[in-house]
Length: 364
Image 1 (cartoon, rainbow, N blue to C red):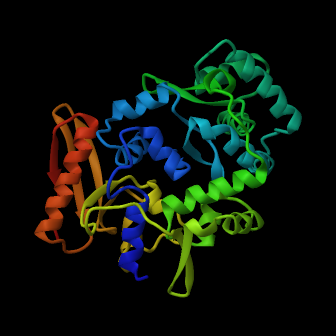
Image 2: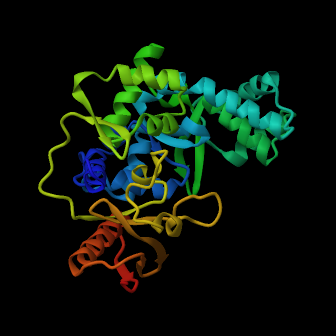
């Protein structure tokens, strides 16, 4: 397996070459979890994998409780399918609780177990009977109960409440996201035992993100290596492995069917699973381009332009009264065919937003 085969295989398995269905929940379910700290960007990450999607249709799936956003793996936000939420939070919750406790201790936030339990009781009371409250409204409820809720403490209290499976994010109210009680918002479904949950999460990751290594999955999931190895051992004959550059990559033995080689283009958000879901993110980048793609601070990636699985530039959007402007920053020479494909990707994004598009940027 060479580098081109690897990235094109990832395109197919992530259903970027062809969307998985017209239901946003199918895309989220297939991927297992979708990194989601950038709310609007993540709507597009789901939409680009969903036939006929619009920003409104993805938000409708949130309002309809088909997908849910919560603090989940690696101490950051993710979308998961509603029916997967409970077994996933049971698997990941203990690690998230330890993370919140560790951050509180390191930053002298004066939050011990008793404080977290007390805050959970206040939050549950504030959200009782189907309440939907913003971060600021929950902060006021905590302050009124005598629990200081400065920025860091509030973040840790809300993260802990989510790690405990008490609350998750609900629908938006204007530009503000709300929080809801999980038991009011989501149905009760069958739980999975720990071994079954590890096996299920491992299968989800490698079916959708493969070819990927054991280290990639360990980074993505945050699971201890012992659990990662147990998950790999559970994959069975429906998965295969291949060697490349001295590494072992796992992937589905039979990949999703596609029509022809992938020379389509995609405009992907900087937190899209295609670029962030691997410990080693170098595969889609030519030498040096990964540094050009990074935003200032923290090593995070700016939105990327992908052609045939390879990152060839960055892009940014500007929304105005007359539509959306998509500006392309090319890293390298692109053919006329590739530029037409990039223009089509920009038009697809504009359709997702329901706005006309203007494309700018000078090719190398």
